[in-house]
Amino acid sequence: MTSIDLNGSVGVITPQTHVFEQPLELACGRKLETAEVVYETYGSLNDTHSNAVLICHALSGHHHAAGYHSPEDTKPGWWDNCIGPGKPIDTEHFFVVSLNNLGGCHGSTGPRSVNPGTGQPYGPDFPPLRVRDWVNCQAMLADVLGIERWVAIVGGSLGGMQAMRWALMYPDRVKHCIVIAAAMKLSAQNIAFNEIARQAIMADPEYRHGRYHEAGTTPRHGLSIARMLGHITYLSDDAMDARFGRDLRSGSFSLGSEERAEFQVESYLRYQGAVFSDHFDANTYLLMTHALDYFDLAREYGDDAISAFSRSSCDFLVISFSTDWRFAPQRSREIVDALIAAGRAVTYADIDSNQGHDSFLLPLPRYHELLAAYMQRVLEAS
Amino acid sequence: MRPDLEVIKSWIDRDTRVLDLGCGDGDLLLQLESSLGVTGLGLEIDPDNITRAVKAGLNIIEQDMDNGLQNFPDKSFDTVILAHALQAVHRPAFVLDEMLRIGREGVITFPNFGHWRCRLQLASRGRMPVSPMMPYSWYNTPNIHFCTVYDFEQLCSEKGIRIRDRRLTTQTRSDSRLANTWPNIFANTAIYRVSR
Image (cartoon, rainbow over all chains, first blue to last red):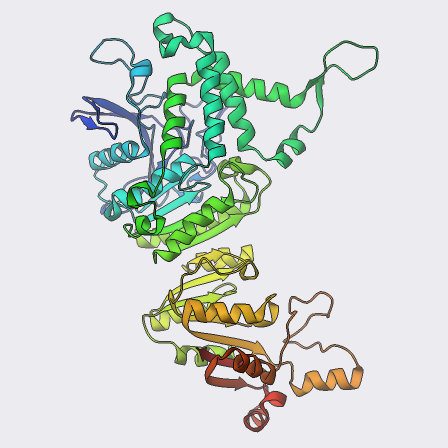
């Protein structure tokens, strides 16, 4: 048994579930008569309810951002290096809320949940979601928790898109918006990668037009390829080279041998794909990537990002990473430029890192020092 | 306290918008925010300076002004400051133009290369001047565009930039009197307030 290190950790956390009794109106026009969200909280809400921080997760994230689920747990939450006592998002001061978004596959209502209309899992019939649906659902959870206004909403990647959408949809309910490695909309290249991932899933014979639950199958292979592809785009060329180079896992290039040489990077990607496909839901993957593709911050504001951000009233911190090519620094600078032109208070840093898009999850010293420095300001505003 | 601070403060109105290009760790902006209630924004490229400035509660954009300032709209600030950075930018004349496009007024401070000590070092030793204020050797200095008080005023005149005010700081009190008569020889640092 591995015993967990509680130093700087929020410790053992029990996820909570809230069931919304009122129907959820969705952007697509449909509604969910009932829905539940699973979430975790770290730290304590102060008397004036002014120290609440919302964490918005990315494509494959979930509610378990920090701490452990049991003392035997080997792995902490996905952003444990950033959330906890003495960490940049300091749970000694902040009440941190992290939920699994609607449509997810970690406990919140999603394609795996039973459709009350049919008694069967929704599967491919789960309504398509937009980022605004998540924001609305998060706002409903805030109401339940008695949080009138978040002192900060923090999100990386797709999470950053939710944070920005919050700033436009509920300007009075956000004080600081922290947008990390995100973009106002995806580029054609980004959408293209997502489409290949979706095609890989749908081409898997086990996918069964999304009704794999009923068929008792799992499109593991397709999901695994989707993850392998995604994984490449989260890393930088340099990072992959430094980590794997052309090292072989097995075989050799000896002349006179027919044995296939297998590169380390192949085996690594297959392993990542396999682990992912064991727990992630294929329909959720399709739903999340579609939401990502459809997101366009300024679409309803005449495609004018400046006029979009003019609606917001919070302060912004925008962070990018130098080798991130999935959400390149230029995408962050577009956000910053629009904020400057809209007269919003904004701080921007481009963190030098060779780890690509994944940098936003890593404890890079400059990144965490900057985040901690900014959160100090957030604390003073709480 | 930095000698140019009081002068710059006296040129900036309360509750205005101030952009500080090359703001360092933000000490000037912080003073302006706390004493005049200005809304400040700083541009900086040094990571440690940026973290320090953010810690101090300032809004900072990581941006290299040598790559342009076109992301700042026309007249989006009341005052644009370039303190001790004119000599370090690649295109000083372009930056001056940009400052007065973005702001109503510009404030520029720079070390006067026409100071008698510089002249003396160059004349007597035949070597590029090195001083506590300009401690770098010629080959590794960030200061690539030194100018004198006269050079700067000549540039402003060519560009039709109006010099609204000028202050000179000197090393000693006696220099200060002399600088009134011979600014190009006795001024250590020149501080200008300019507009179109």
